Length: 99
Image (cartoon, rainbow, N blue to C red; front, side, top):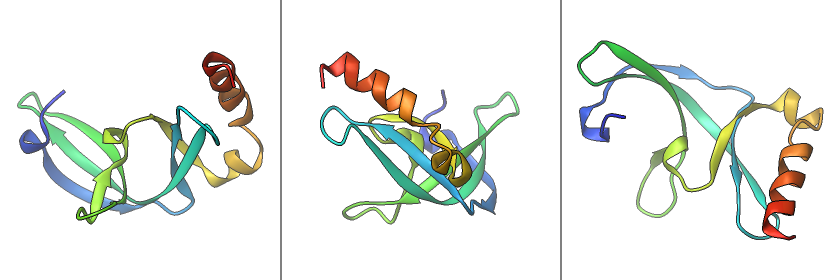
């Protein structure tokens, strides 16, 4: 994977109704962070590109790349959250941690 400094942002798109899903080592064992936007990035010199979710930053950083935050698991649409699609993943994660 290319370093952040090797990335070129090509396009920013809205990310309405999308969140980044994180698995945590303690209660509540998961976190959802609302995406601000999707960002199309060129990575490396091979013409490869990647779409990354961007979330509000914490502390001095205004924004952060969602997959760069510890515990990142996946992106999830609001409909899938409401439908309960995360329950089995969180349950399995709790079992692994003995919670």
